[in-house]
Amino acid sequence: MRNELLGRSGQAAAAVLLVLAFVLIAVPGLSSRPFDKHEALVLQTATEMQTRDDWLVPYFNQQPRLNKPPLSYWATLGVARLRSGDPAAAITILDARMPSLLAALATVVLLVLLGSHLAGRTAGLLAGAIYTASPALGFFAQDARPDTLYAFLCFAAITSLLLAADCVAPMRRRLGLWVGWTLFGLAVLAKGPHIPLFLLIALLIALRLVPSTAPPDTVPLAPGWRATLRRVRPLAGLVLVLLISIPWWWAMRSRIDPAMLADSQLTGTLYQPALSGLRQAHRELLGPMLQLLPWSLIPLIQWRRSLNLLGRSPTLRRLAILGLVPSALLLLAPQHRWHYSLPMLPFLALLISMVVLDGLSSISTRAARRRRIALAATFGLVVMLLGANSSFGILWDRIRYDREHNLAVLVEPPYRSLPILATLSIESAYEIAVATSGRRVLQLAEAEAIADQLRAAGPGCVLLILPSAELDRTGVRQSMIELRRWSERGRELSVMLVAAAGDASDACPSPGSGS
Image 1 (cartoon, rainbow, N blue to C red):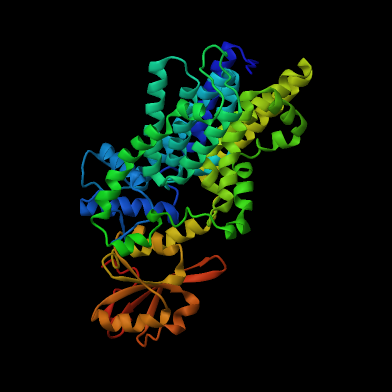
Image 2 (image 1 turned 180 degrees about the horizontal axis):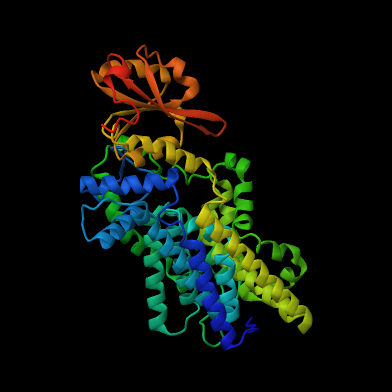
């Protein structure tokens, strides 16, 4: 279905506005906004890999971090090296966020190209605008966690395989398959095989159940699953995926205690189906809709038109399968997060754009003009809201700002070299403390263990991070000085200065001493 409501000049203007919207949303605050727990993990892990001169085994807080494959850390290290030209230069939060920004930009560009190929340039540009002016990009284009890079690689891999499956030219088809399976392997190195595998299942279903949108004499279509499999060569492709991902796995495995590796997420503990996962299935059901607001409401409001178009358009049926089947497969995952659906959102954004254009083409010129104005106004308001959030943090939780301000005491001149103890109960502040201080934070299971740890530490001063309510349970007899206190999720956390032996007020630097 091709519905070109915009002429060439209109399409050029729309492309310029799309670029401006992306810059307004994705660039402000890129290096200045405080980082959260997940970003701290990427930033500090890349820093420790650089310090150890070891790009194989990820480390966080001087312990192996076996939760994620290494591609996001490698990307951070690569950006830092390109930016500074110095292999030993300090890694900044800008270095950690830049791969996500570039991945978000690449996703928008690829979405516009895919939409232009499948449904016309207007549909492609509108799909890019929908994705740009959405929480999916507004909240994750500047996020250092690996999910944005992962989403792009998954989307690009499936897009390449989809187009290759419908391509008649042998060389272009083989090239598309090679590119698709290579991107598939890189996606596995970014965060694991589960979402790429679910998208591959959705792709095979779409190819099997929905006829090609290409002219019937250009694509060798044959009935049955065997013919469908031949179009994407999954066995040869999976061999290529293994060749890309397995070398790192084996090299890392030879350096790690097998018992430690067996209990890690790298062995697939989060990928095992579990009926208990249905208790939080609403996250997978609502995730795509919330991340594409307000645009995701359009197919729901116009549900009759959407169903009618679904019956008429093979392209729309394919997009629906690619966007919804992986989310359905995630319902049985033992763990649910809103951003797990990020790789499927570009397909749904294109679906929404086709529904919008179908609605505009079927009404009178005057009514269509009013709807276009309403869409443009909504787009402008969403862009301004997301841009203001990037610049001023109006939608971010204030905790991240308070936490950054108070934990900055860890690197103030009087305290920047002191050991740090923390209890498990400080939760996310632990990762922030490690990344902010750039040194080891020793975690203790209970506040009651602090006194024993101080005695074992010998003479000197120590920084403690713990809930303020647990101060009386530490068993510490010497006096403590409270350096910082802030509220976090209904409780208060404190940074305390205490002498391992003697009186803190005599043995430790006083606040503001600068020495």
